[in-house]
Image (tube, rainbow, N blue to C red; front, side, top):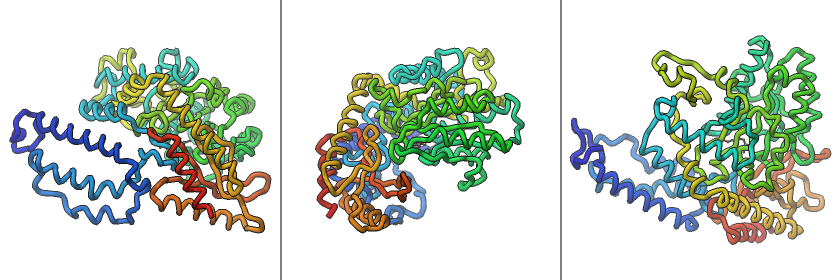
Length: 507
Ligand SMILES: *Cc1c(COP(=O)(O)O)cnc(C)c1O
């Protein structure tokens, strides 16, 4: 940027430093005002398909806006075009899917990352980007009570920020296959991965991406293991599936245990799953146990929730998303492994133009070798700011308040005889529904629940989403509503208002 209000050389109209400062202040003001106005918008966007596009010109501008004053039109479009087309994920009455916490410190970190514009693909391309990331993830390992050998300070383990839990699972799967291959499995083995029926679809997608699964319906190469009454993976069924595959000459190489499933927050028994890998010999053959704790992992900052990870010592990798429930805006996935060599062996390729003395010395980490893309943003800044701003105490208070609100909501549901809690409450996630009426068919009950959700969402006052839980004990699957409490600014009054709206709309 040049300090020349006529822009840079060659007629390129860059913002001068002073213009950038002025617009930057104005944008930060706009964001702060947006946050203050959040409760005035309908939570779920009410536009129809094409509404937003119809307000955008069909062709790009030939002439740019020129100076600062031209930006008035951009700020006007934020109000007229953008806001109506947003679902307000940061609304305190957003209870759908899982939360996607943003926070002031994280937004400032994101801004700084963009302002610095560094590419941290190699240690040498910006040493601070690598070393801050490593230290901040080691802090997070300490805060969440992860075992020592998942940290960068251990002999063989390490940690990295991936974009998403989906990428973390893909990277773990590719490392797993390479490890099993290096221990003697032919490269053209018939590879098989395992996860529960409640696992996130990203496990299947990872298998499709790395050529293990032949399409989304390939249940032979991604085996979805039946769950128990709490929707947790059944280790006995996993063991039977693995033995069947081994007997048929197939190659089990990867198991994903979910700690905090997307549907209902179910927790697979990590230790028992690890024991299955040991008993069947899959572990000795290099087979890999990955823990996907995308949402629930954040709760590990509270010692009272560490039981979720009982048995974590037997896992090869684990990831969770600070971008869900730990006040760090998307994207930020914390990935830990006890076998960094397996990652490097699966993912390193070094073309001549990336060779450098620091990498050759072996004294530094090059995070490009830990991920799918080459380039990488300085995402650690936002996590660094969040951890420093809130401190462990602040983060624990954040999680504990939401879990307390989840307990309140669960009690209110239980106290209303028209409703039932449909799965054990998991942290701040409550699955619930209207009970079946006498003589009603299951699909009519589902229909009433769907209609209730549509009614409350259409009001604009709250936004909830749904899932279908498998039937237990021969019962049919059930359509249930999910109350996922976790927005940065959600207070008891928001949860209470949501419950009152549900109760009064239930009929
Ligand atoms: C949200 C979620 C994911 C996907 O997260 P991304 O970071 O968007 O890839 C994966 N697994 C579980 C259990 C999730 O809840």
